[in-house]
Amino acid sequence: MFKAVASGELLIDFNSVSADEMAYPTLAGHPGGATINCLATLRTFGAQAAFIGKAGNDAFGKLLLHTINQLGIDTHNFFLTDDAFTTLAFVTLDETGDREFSFARKPGADLLLHFEEVDLSVFDDADVFHFGTVSMTREPSRQATKDLVEYARSKGILIGFDPNLRKNLWGSLDEAREQMLWGLSKADIVKISDEEIDFLYGLSPEEGAQYILDNYPVRLVYATCGAKGCYYNNRLVKGFTPAMKGLHVIDTCGAGDIFGGSAMFRFLQLGKAPELLSDADLQDISIDSTCIKAH
Image 1 (cartoon, rainbow, N blue to C red):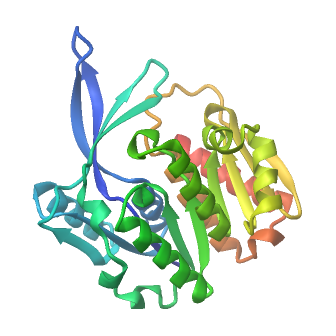
Image 2 (image 1 turned 120 degrees about the vertical axis):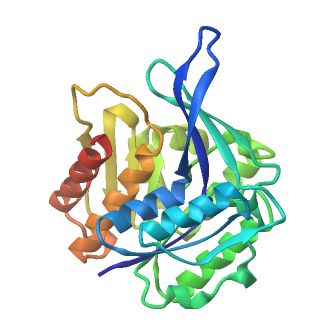
Image 3 (image 1 turned 90 degrees about the horizontal axis):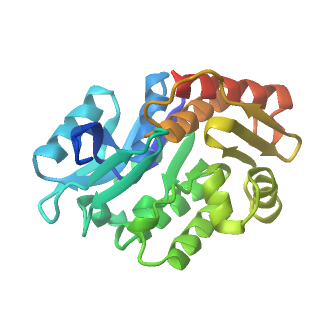
């Protein structure tokens, strides 16, 4: 079975359950974080999975450790620290179900990961290493993430990347753009949203996916467009899969991460190089992943 390794943020999402007459939300805590959501999806389908990261040595950190252990995710490189509290993300929704994030993370424990802490044997027999930019907003986790990417590349491991832009976590948007572009320069497979393409290039999702293929060593791009669907591109074909119709959106939190994890699993099942996937292959991957995300 495939083995996936991911590094990044593991935190508590406080999601809105209801709101009072003054619009103050009632919130419920859930495990969250873009890269762990993707990894948990891969694990749900049966992949071996290992997570690299850090949380606080507090009630929430211990709860997160228990949760991913219950999922069967390898936690030998998930550390609890006394130096900072577990990161908290407060998620509120608008009338369309879209999200707004407010973070308690100055710093959060996830930012304190050092490359030297990691037992690199976790990469033995790994098929894919997945990362995002939330762990790259500050040091030392920024350099740790970059060192992990470079190590995985040196081992010939496939690199998956989701820019996952959260503007309010960055010191400046120029800094966010710089780190997102660094990630694109190292990735084989990219899952990127229409909003992130517009932020980076001011292009449409279709144009942006092609631009990424033309200007970076990326071999496969999924450009997701929320309720509209998903563009896919590799060096052989490009196309579009519309989203399912007639659905009532309740909450979009984690939807892109689930799509990315589902698409990665289906890709690994096919056993082909990313640049050699046919239009039929990519249609099947994106349709299956869109259905799973909607479910």
